[in-house]
Image: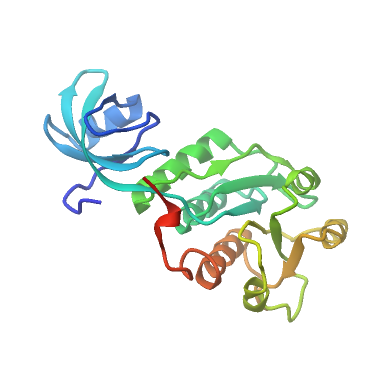
Length: 254
């Protein structure tokens, strides 16, 4: 990203050099009334298909801002194929989980209801906006997917059989996550963290009967659910994921 340009926006439209885009209502308000932008000011824009671009403002209307794409600055980068199953938490804690895991890099969020889940409802549309804002701020070019909330048993049953489930089980002892992650052969991984209070015995029994489930421990401390998600994803990237591997052309889309 051009370090002299501080404004970075996501566009739903597929972008290309020379193209013109009419920005959304919220983005128009942000540029006009918050950032006080003027015609010919530069902004960074990106889509979820082709990558990132420098654009200039060519029209500021009462109801919309029009930009023109000038040059491509980087291609779309797709993170490793890691998903996260999590149980909804209170609003601020769910927001933290979504924001930080998006910054770290993953492909999909799967919110689920377990026996001990206390927060039963979340606004997926609001969380989608949080995901976009996190990608805008961290310089990413990939927007993770988030699915509707479903019961844990349904989520587990509908996962593809070739995906390894890394089950973060607070009841385990001496099952070090570092050794466990290094033993995983599959590049398609789903991290599973529980709710406040952990999983019920019946849920643990269900998970342990699955051939593609690997129970691991995150240590001897009791962690908040959002902390467990961030730690598990960080360790995955550091040991076998994006940070461990040399970044090469396979993760970039021209």
